[in-house]
Amino acid sequence: MNKNPVIVIISSSILFICLFVGCTKTNVNLQSKVTSGKEIFLRLADNQSEDYVTVRADREFAKIVEQKSNGRIKVDVYPAGQLGDEKDAIEQVQFGGIDFIRVSVSTLSVIDKEMGVLILPYIYRDQEHMFKVLDGPIGDNIITGLENFKLTGLCWFDAGARNFYNTKKDIVTPDDLKGLKIRVQENKIMIDMVNALGALPTPMTYGEVYRALQIGVIDGAENNWLSYISSNHYEVAKHITIVEHVRIPEMIVASKISMDNLSKDDQKIIKEAAKEAAKYQRQEWLKDEEEAKKKTADKGVFITKLQTNKTFQEKVKPLYETYGKDYQDLIQSIINTNK
Ligand code: GCU
Image 1 (cartoon, rainbow, N blue to C red):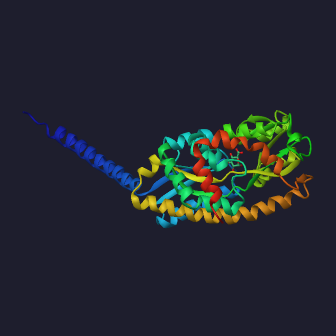
Image 2: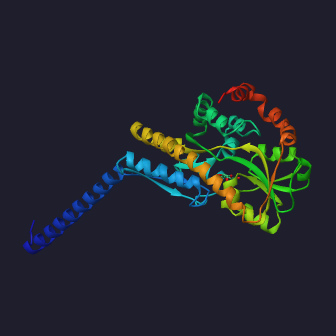
Image 3: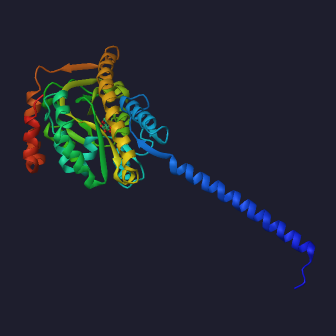
């Protein structure tokens, strides 16, 4: 074969350039693969606003994870429902699209019926009793049960007790609630509870409540002090009654799919960090709750303090029949849990 030296030189140069560029590219790719193999980026969803205590605790969790992993694992917190409302976001967590969520146990109990027991009205004597239950074997068993729904429960947050508030009048007895349209979480237990009290339950997402109160689609809602203040519901619904009908704890929950993708050591880091973040959250909750109550003083809010909430307690008793009949033992052990 006749080889023209010029052509040979040109084609060898092209081959050399291709090989060189190719190699360099491969190196770059390999490099970035190694880097991304080392660093892990995870996402956490929360429907509360930036300065809310749960979001601060989420950031505390992210900080501890980063510290414990020497900067290798990064958790990005997305507050204010940026990744969807709780119901949609939790589904994404089940499928591994979102790695963590800080979520109300009410939303979880739609998926895991057993968790419904944890949000039955007046099931806890007070906050101390609730955490005795959640931090003990009962809470641990419930966390184990969540694995059946592709979720890994990491820790329990405080969310205080919930009260009724409305745009119209002071509520003193359940009769005063009659005919009022009260927003509830999208959960059958909450719907039945408000029905049992004689009001008209209107399920909708948390993010929709302010506007619905403002334009009169609903007359009221029920939530804890911090949510009442931080979501500005107090601006429109000025009558609040301290009924404390339910304590709905909250959790950071991980996607089981995301957790299974991590090494055992990294899973341990995540679990320990969540427990530490929960300690921080519970302390901060109490402080913020006091602040929130004080804030109402100069905001023209009418606070009704009841001598007793016995009549409210009586009215919601049937819920123990409907939602408790399959969980009698669990309910009994919650009641028997001592401080
Ligand atoms: C609380 C809780 C939220 C929840 C909300 C609700 O504010 O922190 O996670 O969505 O209640 O009533 O829906």
